[in-house]
Length: 404
Image 1 (spheres, helix red, strand yellow):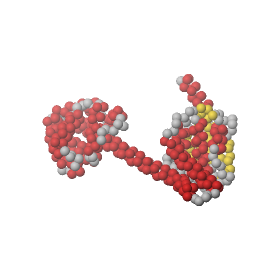
Image 2 (cartoon, helix red, strand yellow):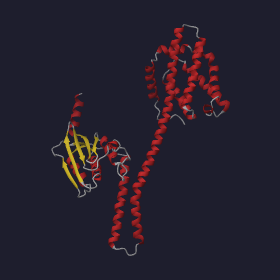
Image 3 (cartoon, helix red, strand yellow):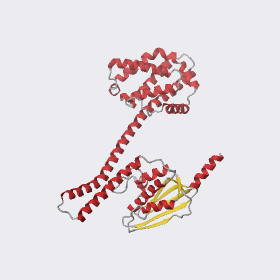
Image 4 (spheres, helix red, strand yellow):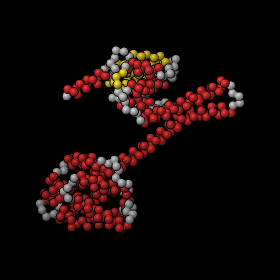
């Protein structure tokens, strides 16, 4: 396990500098630590031997040393260099990168973080003992040096812990990706299996039925066509969500877009539609085709919420540089504790469906400089409000930039 490519050492160094400010690290503190390098040097061998002797007494720490005495000698050399750099007085980006790499090496060999913390604590105790036993100067200066060295060790520990945190984050991301893949696979399998079973049944009938009537043949061919389209729509939804094209933002009449979305959606006789979108409204500035997909998804969502019928209302109003279009239904509504989750990918309150319609709508709107808001009252219905910039708002923004 080499250092992950995603690690930004410059960012880690900036964080290190921030932590230096936090703990009150100063150039004077660096000089005090560097000044004790010669005092500590004669005692490094004993300090390092004690360090590895202690590791040998703890099986959970000792188990990561698999190369015997030869590996221990190499590790002692690495620790000796680490201690020399600690009191070098030079704490630049290269220093931080090497410190972080030490932490990552501990991750690689499988040393639990608690033992890393305990090991640094033992080194700290040994260094403090060396200072107190061999200090010949002013006691106040000793205390200042002790404080400086403690701050430096705390900073080192923070960098080492960052490596552990990075590994945890990467592991969590991998786990979440695998969980998402499993969730997608399960959803796709469920959504495709049903239409495929219908197709399979109809194909079996057409192959084995004896002298089926033309009406029966037509019925089964229609079923096959219908459920192939269901499967195709599932695949299209996944494809649309995986890679939304870059929007081509141009002015267009929102009323026309809403009517297109309504006409493209099969409307049950039990649904009453009210459209209130004055033609005098300023043009919306977005990708017309993508926004039509948004409204088609919201309309379809509203219809599914009213299986027994109801009223679908589409209302558009002009705000301050925006157009607000509300798609409201009189359906079952959404419980308050579920409302915050309905735009999550693969989450659905319905028995069928992948739960991608609303995430796709929100993603499209965000790419087009818009947004989506939802309110709902169980038993009374749900309202989705789409916010889109107007052509006038874009012109005003351009003029403002030119003036500035």
